[in-house]
Length: 281
Length: 249
Image 1 (cartoon, each protein chain N blue to C red):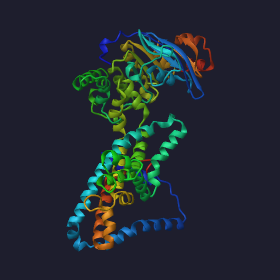
Image 2 (image 1 turned 60 degrees about the vertical axis):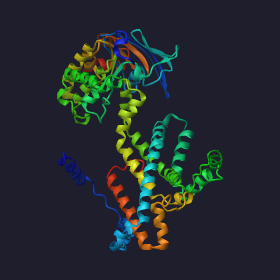
Image 3 (image 1 turned 90 degrees about the vertical axis):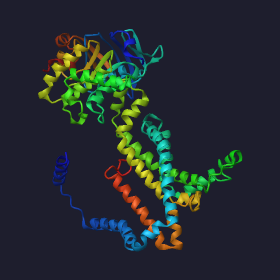
Image 4 (image 1 turned 45 degrees about the horizontal axis):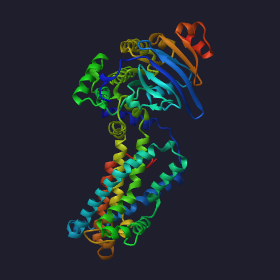
């Protein structure tokens, strides 16, 4: 089991044709590696390793970490509940009019290319106390959303959902449609086809999309601080706390940043080579 | 949906298919009598697979009808278009379309389970079909670990375990190496005869037709160009394709 794939990989490496690249291209490529890794290296070099335990054990750190993990978990769940159906719709939209198809995909992609602070502002205009929906909501129920933990979750959901939707759509499109047809001819209802064939076959991509989505939600800053503010314990997530600590106590900020780096590394390991076409390719 | 026992006895398949896909028009009428398999032949793009998918309910008809025995599966005039899941038309797909994430046993048990039989019942039925097809030793394998001939037997066992009243096979032998084709063909012929219901098989060459079918319908460009027995087509081929198909051996 273990020798086969390895041997095959080794063979492929040997069989790869030599393709020389002009040296400036190689140098520029190495420059890109430097740009991507040197800042993180600096972070590790300047980290207050000696006081790390004390800094991370602080009440404020633990509260920010707990809030981040909790809100990111809820927003990831929301993204799955809403994004998975949307990804299914998009993956079957090829027969829809091009305008509908492209429009839908553009709408999904907007939060991906939009500066998060703009997203936060837009959320405020929709759900703020004087917002399009926020004002009637407060008048009818007395509920206000901005600057609450719910606002954190909404901001994260807004920003992270596209990652999930696009990754999962790519995975669903990779599933051989003949398997779904086969399941139907065997008597399976549409729900059974989804539950037992299509979704299990797309599971690696769904997992990858969920991990990406969770990482993005955990790192969310711009939309969160705009729409939810930075109240310790209720809206001050790890990224927000990191930014604020930088003004007060840079070493504490670096410690918080290290936690975020650790989370990112865990994400990377969890993904391994599960990067899905559509997100990377 | 409530049990196969309530269904009427297997009968003849009678289909008049008219549908448009882009610029392609399929306009084919065919009858497959129970116990007398019908071979569908034609060049690439003639509409053979499209015809099977329309009979199975995976493609909607623009006009025409599909009957199996006394059951109306589709009738454009009457506005009947039963979904594939309710047609009880089994399909062996080109390339087999086995569920790659399920074991052989789970593949074969899929139909019974999807039709609401309990897990234990479905697995017991699967064991019977696997035994009949010599698949018992392969029960725990995934489709990716099967040879072409084994995968074909799983595909047929899976289709039959769902208790179909008609059976459609789309080039069931074309994915196989030449060395094993003959043996698998004879084996397949036995199973198709044992099925006894209406059967349509898209056939790749003369040997397949000779082994598997009693009657032949030749289609080209979405229309029927000739029908009859293999001998009749061989004696008086209506088109160049039929002439070459029946001559090749």
